[in-house]
Amino acid sequence: MSEILVFFTQTNILEFKLPELKTLAKLSSVPLTLNENSHDKKNPFLVLDLQSEDDAKRLMKRTVLMRSMYELWASAKTHDDLYSQLAKCPHHLKAQYVQRPDGTFRVKVDAFGKKLQDPDRQDRLDKILGILPFEGKVKLNNPDQSFHLLELYGQAGSKTPDKPLRVYFGRWLMDGQRDQIRHYHLQKRQYIGNTSMDSCLSLLMANQAMVTENALVCDPFVGTGSLLVAAAGCGAYVTGTDIDYNVLHGKAPYGIRESTRKIGSDKNNLVNHEQYTVDNIPQHPCLELVANSEQPLSVHVSRRLITMRKHLDYEEARESELQATVSDDHYTESFRYRYFHSAGVPEQKAKADARDEQDPLDRERKVQS
Image 1: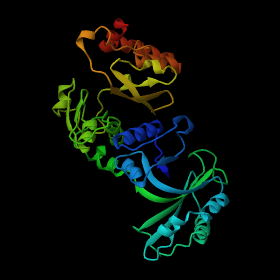
Image 2: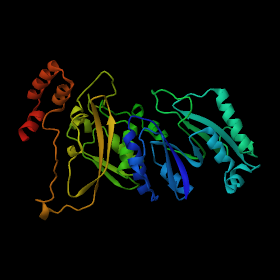
Image 3: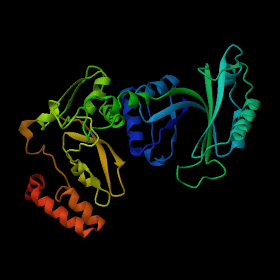
């Protein structure tokens, strides 16, 4: 069993970190025990107990939220305690990675939540090299082994403490697939709309859906195809449908890359923070909830990625009992009504009411309720 340190990237989709990790573990057949309640989602570091280094690398082959993984050699609240642990480094680690005159290495010092000055970095390097007398040659680019001292000072925007909250030292194993976000970036696509999903979320959805090579993926609300692009990148066969004929056939104005041209709105997909509860999630006897991840968009609203897994086949003979239900339907009033009502803006609320009366879809929802 090996202690592995995960370094997550910090984005506005913090709730997606652990669901992606759990899904990739299942997809890669990597045994994983994870206590979600004990982990602070704002903490970019997470220590895992994995059976081998190969298991760690399998997890990193598709992740877009895990920045890097390290074989953890020491972890402490203070530098002195960390140095004491390194001084007791197991002999087999020293023999394999430190006492290697024919190898190359580098040691890097990085801090999260604080910018370290060069003298501070050099002081830490000198102390580490005094404890671990590497016998190989220093090579800053593409060495055989890369060692990292990582210091946590808290969250960006918060008051930075003088001393780190936690320090880690480990051997770098592998980086995640953040380059795939750039590879599938919207700016590189010829056909997009103003509501096209960004590449990071598309790749996350493909991971959550456990898309594999030769799988068949169907997106019934395909739009400009962001999810299918990510799924195809995983080797899947893809297809989709959409209610808008112009979207599917690439006709103007939707799909033209012009920043001044705006069409449509996705506000009806947003949830008001104050009114959202887990009872808003639709339920079906054939589906089980796997993950419910929130992406904040503003102070008042956010959107959620709901991941469900089919665990029971639907049978027409049992149609009456196999029905979808929702305990608390947040569509009983339009999003714009609830948004302006909770914000306490009477003028905007009056305008929203007027627009609701002109919106056939909203009117239909009110009639159904």
